[in-house]
Length: 415
Image (tube, rainbow, N blue to C red; front, side, top):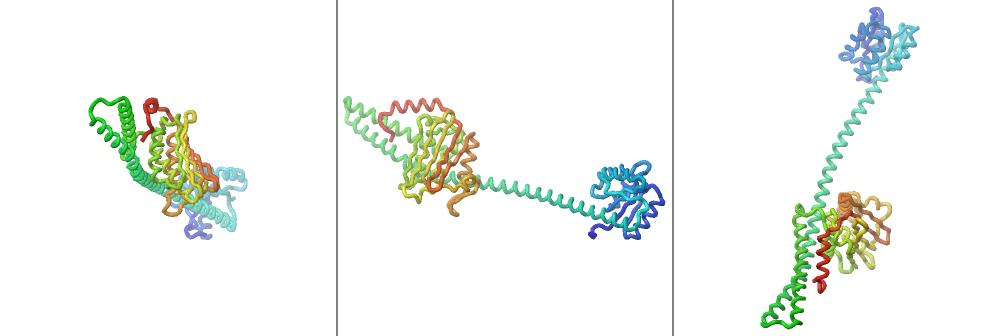
């Protein structure tokens, strides 16, 4: 018997003779016993005596043995109750067992049977108590585990946000470097055109028809170059002040910004093509980080094709009904089928330590879903990978009109 159980027995019987005889017998058998004259007194003793087993008479005035069994189950669910009955009341004893009693004993039972039944009841209580402690430990473990999961989840979210912020800063630095290079071409054209105009106008007199035509062309080129500079500066402002940025972006503008970023990220030996369908150019999507996501996808493709003999990457954007679709395709090493379903998991990466955070595709997928779209990946080992982003889109009428007007006015290609 476990030392934590001191073999306490509570006797509930309305007969003083039966109570006295049972108390004497229990003490002789080594049990610590307490007697109660009725059900209410017995239930009260449950709270201070804490018996390991209860012996309860079935037929008592005031509160029957069945009622004691029901009340004891409520107050002390792990304490077994053995019903005491006369030989011809076994049918009622069986009914008591159906109501929750552990068993029954016929009054006058011999010492060996009494010792055996009490021992069985106490071992049953030991098992119930052990199970109760296990359940409590399990509940406490689950609470601790849930708390740990919540804490780790918060930490992972903070880490993800820091990684995303770091990637945005890296993209900003690359974008600024690319933007500086892009600004040089239109600035050089503007300076050249202004110098030529100053020279022409300094000659005095009215220009002839040919010169006037050249002046108009130079002014148009200058206007176009100034517009291009304005777009680059606008993109820089969006990167520098993300909180003030629009919650939407224009697909065509995103592709133009991607070209700037790719200038710094894609090696000269990699064949890169970036195309946007005219029908998709002026579509607006609720995806302010589209440029950053596309840049990360192109960077992944660069790493995938770096060891290929003829490395190729293509970016395409097109309209498909009410959807804007952007696709990044490479002929890189491909992704094994067994890990393809995991590549969008946070922090999962196949790159060498220090060469990838495992957050790029995860953030891309989350951002696509947040915008009401989806990201899909198809890949084959030794053939390459295709990543497609599908986004619900709206056509910006004003932007479309302005774009058409610029195309009509353009007498020469953009600088």
